[in-house]
Image 1 (cartoon, rainbow over the protein chains, first blue to last red):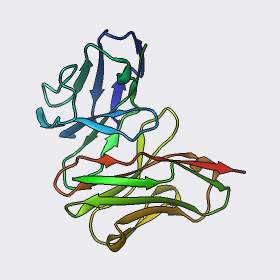
Image 2: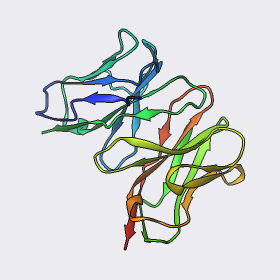
Image 3: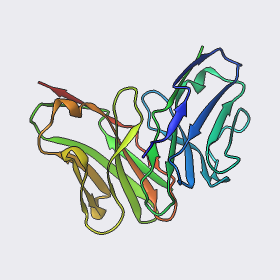
Image 4: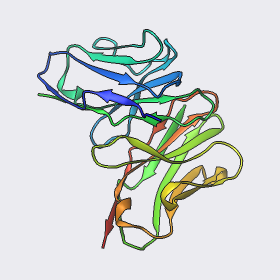
Length: 114
Length: 113
């Protein structure tokens, strides 16, 4: 089966610009996650969707980050305006549901803010 | 609240030697525990997971881990390292019924000939 698809793979922007990342989860997966992985650190959950509803966005910097999953399938993560400290890999992941089901990760979108 | 501590940001072994990557967790509920591997410029791939049942869990590529509740540990082992095992390894914890994975800071495994 097809894995989690993300685009773009790489993006370089200047600070204060905006950027958007797209994610298409594995077909049929109800739960979608966005993680931020800063170089040298483990991934940190930004937001979790169950279908098109938000389950957890407690660590999402809402003054500059936004995410949506309007039809309960693919999702977009936006950063506006970007700061230097937003340079990271943004990982999208999906799972069929909770209760210990495996979470599958995409290859990530690498953001460099200069 | 849940957290994971991975001891050692870097571990170096020789090819053919035992691999031991340490992970200790803290969880207020019965934990689900995971090991993921990340190769350069790639996403995370699940190696193995513990949810319930047998405490010794076998995963892909010859890796295994043992859940020890008394020690709050979930160390990853492999009897004989291969050059292709060189990668970053992440331990993660979640609670049953929801899927918020909390990751450790990772351990980079270096394998020398």
